[in-house]
Image (cartoon, rainbow, N blue to C red):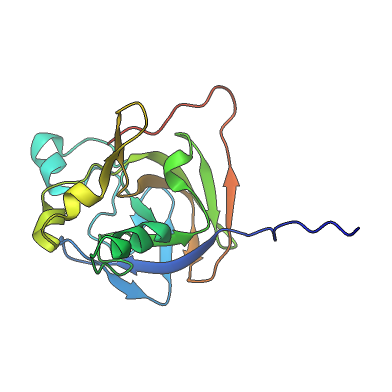
Length: 188
């Protein structure tokens, strides 16, 4: 008897996006350039210090732990099943992935995106009211509860850039978990 196994699926980048202006959605692009310690070239959220408007108002000198926003494309599928029409980059992500459970990865996980770029996960995106301004009821759809009743935030993860590189749709993603005990991602 010949045994068969499920094919090994390599996680991939499906969409990349940026926006030079602060707004909710970003524009899909053929490629984005990541710069270490800075973020996505040409994106309003790039910089060494925090760029998110509400955080700038509190303390503009905080380090920017939100240089790159990643969302798993499977979330778009889930939202479509709930009646929402949300395309990649419309929730403000710079990188949309497929085949990788981003939300289950621990803090400090490093992702090689394509041949050179490396990002390190810093936390979960905390959904805000802008999501409901985009589509009414969407905030509730990107929040859930686990079996223990704990709040689950599904709107993606945030990262900092460790190594420069260009990232394009179709690029493979390599996952490197941190050493030692793993800490779950928390909202930032």
